[in-house]
Amino acid sequence: MNSNSLRSPLGKVKGLGSAKSGTEHFMVQRLTALALIPLTVWFCFSLAAMPQMDFETFTAWLRSPISASLMILTIIMTFYHAYLGLQVVIEDYVSDHAVRLAAIIAIQFICILVSVIGLVSVVKIIVGGPA
Image 1 (cartoon, helix red, strand yellow):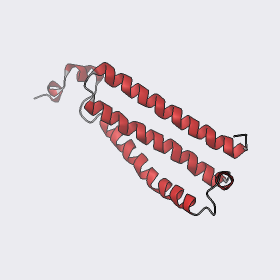
Image 2: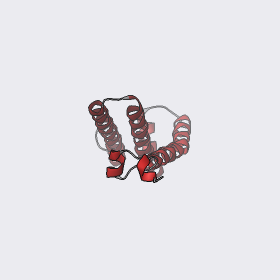
Image 3: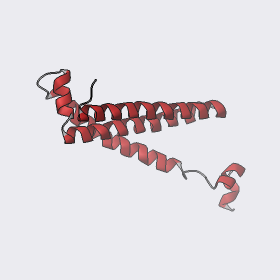
Image 4: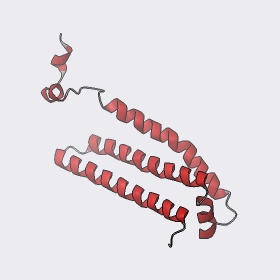
């Protein structure tokens, strides 16, 4: 029996089948989760080690090149991981194709928007711009 006969007509046209794109998505989601473990631990310990919990102390801490770089990585990884996870939930539980597509686009837009706001905020603190 030919293995192509078990694939749907759409799968034959797209050249996709079981585990052709889902594996990469799964691995990227796991890698972002793995990267978030040390980043989250670093962030929590850094906040706990601050002598005061005020704006001036936080901004001085964030102006350090290491803190700024790790914060940028944390923001990127957090929202990319969130997007990947929410995409899977939508694909699994939303049956209407149009609603599913609209929801995935909305989630992607929101994750990009919020991450850009976070990144611009970090850069603004680094360069010392007005609040």
